[in-house]
Amino acid sequence: MSRTIEFRLSGSGGQGLILAGVILADAAIREGKNAVQAQSYGPEARGGASKAEVIISDGEIDYPKVVLPDVVLAMSQEAANKYAARVKKGGLLIVDSTYVKNIPATPGRVYVFPISRLAREKVGKELVANIVALGILAGLTGVVSRQVLEQALLSRIPKGTETLNMQALEAGFEMAKASSVKVPA
Image (cartoon, rainbow, N blue to C red; front, side):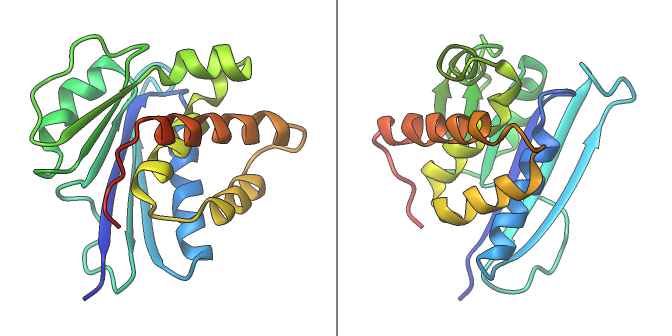
């Protein structure tokens, strides 16, 4: 039986969630898995609502849209309000406590991390909060290996930002490890 996991990465335009979704799907493909990635954002783009969806499977993907995500990342209050209740029962809701102050009711397990603040304080730029979040997602779920995620990351970011982005990914993996709760693969 094949394993399929659905992700919804949501927040505000400009937070880099679409890039994070592309990197996650790229890493899955590099690992020999099947992946589908889709995105949407409001007409305002920067500052408006934004989401990226990724489906990763060891087998065929029958339907290319996320129906009931196993993992929801909410990096804005609006995203948390809209998607927290739509995570699969027992799934994961990962919240950026920098911008999400009220966590709505959810059937999933809630993980709260100061993602954007951590990017600012540990890495020096909030711009890489999406990569910190990617490290947290991969660290909690084990959906792709760290090595392959690093390869996908380095192939998708602008030249000259490699060190910054690798530090952000490391910070995310550290946060996931510190949570001490692992999701069964």
